[in-house]
Image (cartoon, rainbow, N blue to C red):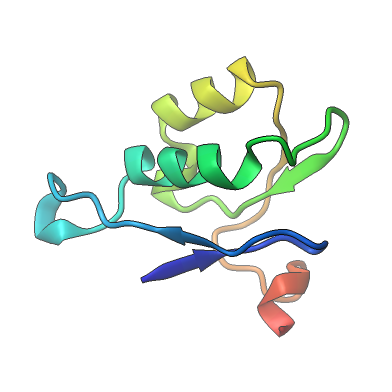
Length: 89
């Protein structure tokens, strides 16, 4: 199970595994579905959305969806707990 949350009052979003993925894992599609739920009516234009450079975060499908919805991202290394506040929670 993968969980996502924000550094503000927001509901917890549970990302479902992609049944069509190899080994029933996570894909850019399952991540995008979780973002649709997690960001719906919560993301405000001008805010920055933070994610690392994991493959599902950099997939073309996801980048297109983020751009279409005006979500601005910050580019981070794949694993950067020193830069990511939520890693310390």
